Length: 142
Image (cartoon, rainbow, N blue to C red; front, side, top):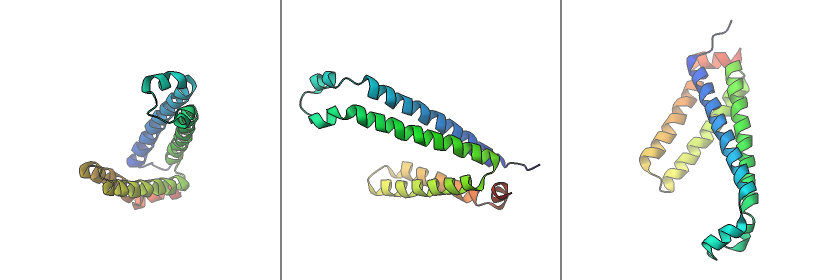
């Protein structure tokens, strides 16, 4: 019987929690798309926002809901694959983490606070290093 590393279990639980939050967020955007009243918003803010923006607001919120729903499904599938030791999940996680690092470096250039960017770069780097540890790689390659 294989023994799953504790860090992999922790990462899987964090993925599950993130997936649940993304699912809730997606349902919120779907509800917002369904309940938004363009006429009421137009009366409250006046002409400061172009009509095409207001008219497409439900479509925009629906698209955001769909995006977050897809991300939630990916997150939950990734968590399941972490728990089962599927090597593709480790590779996919590394790809997402590297993209996160790149995005956070760009955020540093964009004027985001240095402390938050360094923290948001450091954590993914630590996780990538962890996913390359021999015992962790062994869990995913058996």
